[in-house]
Length: 427
Ligand code: HEM
Image (tube, rainbow, N blue to C red; front, top):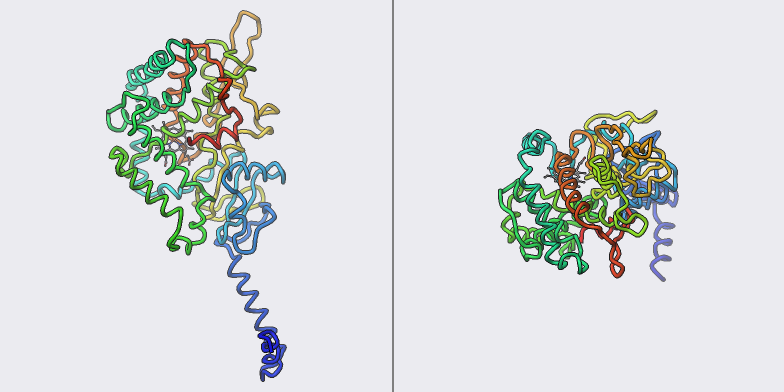
């Protein structure tokens, strides 16, 4: 007799009867199903959920490698800019909107540092060092570092005769300004090994922080598997970070080192494509508009670090309970046609300008709100480096655009698509 027939025979002969066995089995299966699909926060009424959740993992595997773009796709596919998903046992609300809800979610940021006394103090120190009032103290730094970009480019391209990639010079620019602010030191060479190692480790660490990439955050048992690739990678990066002594300080945030080159290099790419070869007014309002458009269009920090609501948040008829995980797609919020108009997907600095009314007059800057776009986040944990980042863009672009007529490489053209470019931004 095979095992199945054995089981049937056993159940038939059992003194408790077929009905009882059936009832117990169904209850156990139902309990198991509930255990595997329960969530920390119950389904939030009034916020649509994305179909297709798998029984155990929910939506965990669906966002893939570029989860902000998948969230943006869901938003366009289902026509809802706020929706909920399930990451194993964690309910998450995704915001793809440029809406007031964004700044009302002042939750703590997990994955980097929780909102406690220590992080409050650090934030206060960063905000003071990076405040508008302090900017005039850094004029010499902006001047020296932006000068080094053009002077090295001048030498390395033999006065513009040879083709060169801007990226290494801009990476050194971002790293040197951060090192000067934090330690009062800088590096001369754009290709020195230590500089390349710091840049590589810095951006690799930031990729480890992606919200839905870290399956072990949602399935704790994975942390204990002997061959956990994420653990091994984290350990390797930690070792390399410690070896590059400069990065040893746990408190150091090298945020600008990854974000500034990503934005600036792509912005230059957009300005020198065949359609727009250096076609701009050489004025301060136009330069400021290029800087704002670069920030909006190339949303380098495209998905916020995961946050949790600190209190119940009302959204129309719905209430998002305290402690709900919230993920904000700044990339989607920066490209919604409902807010930015039909050319939301185009790099167009003139959206920030009023066109000249009579031919000899020039473009004038439009007044902007305190959160012109979502690339620096919003609310209490928004980027305290936003002012210095804009100054750095202005200084570098001013030198590069006023001294050079930039042309895109034919053999290695820039990737100017706001999604594709994001996939290569960490290189
Ligand atoms: C293009 C340039 C930059 C972009 C796009 C950017 C973007 C961001 C974003 C999106 C956040 C998280 C905000 C949130 O969770 O709501 C952040 C946090 C932060 N950024 Fe930036 N950033 C840039 C440059 C800089 C620079 C140059 C510095 C410093 C010199 C800096 C320092 C920081 C710090 C310290 C935080 C943490 C704030 C906190 O935890 O409360 N950033 N940045």
